[in-house]
Image (cartoon, rainbow, N blue to C red; front, side, top):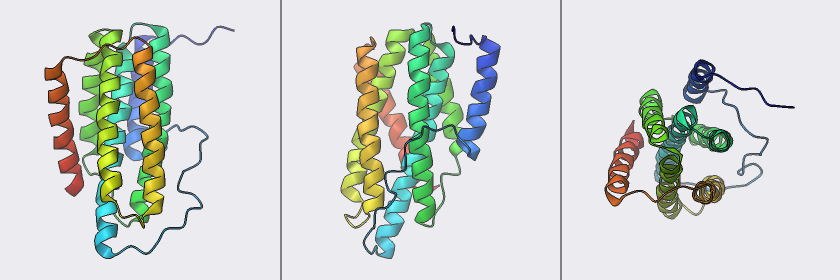
Length: 214
């Protein structure tokens, strides 16, 4: 049976609903369990706990932005199969969003107060990438995921080895991001020009440094 075909207005409404769910909770997730469930962690000092909380806040902010990027690109993607692939990846990114939020709360801190700003800005960037064409949109996804992996590697090095629950979440996220990057390239993503990569890196640093504190 042929699937439902949504108009641009339908997709805009769906996107708005997704934005509310992403920023304020109740996001659509897959059936995968939280990787940290059942894992016992060692004793964390106050300094270690505070650092873990701030880094997981950054990761949560990054997942808010990633969700918006995917939804913005899905809104303007030309090919149906590309749009559907982005929507599937977005649901998996929602898993990360929920896992990070749960861990942030376990560490007795809060998610970024600027989540609406991260979502709105990233949605616009994603939509512009989609307008540029599917090969550039997919290339943008691949480069975004590669930069996210670098951040995750850095956080895995910084977080205490005793914080096994955060490590479990970040390792699963890293695996998923790598798979998303590979899928985007295999679907026809083009490598982005170096100046675009540099701008993306600067923007990413601005967000991570802000989310660390706010």
